[in-house]
Length: 83
Image (cartoon, rainbow, N blue to C red):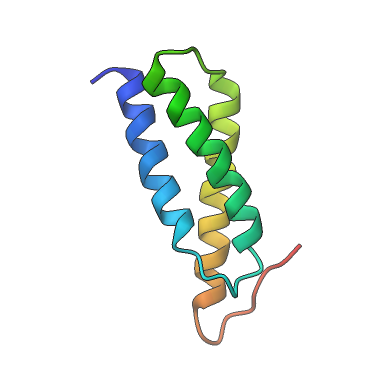
């Protein structure tokens, strides 16, 4: 599998999961911004335009960070971690 195919599948999965964050979550607004960037990057990949690998890695890390934190928010009896 090519790197761009792997990148595209990862972006699709991450975008879908960020979309499922509850609107009641503190992190929902931030997730929306990350999703927008992920969608833009996925469109660039699909159209064959080059992307900045560093930007892709940074935004992907941020997306997974938000997923992790929002998941902890949902667990009963756990302290939420907010910035």
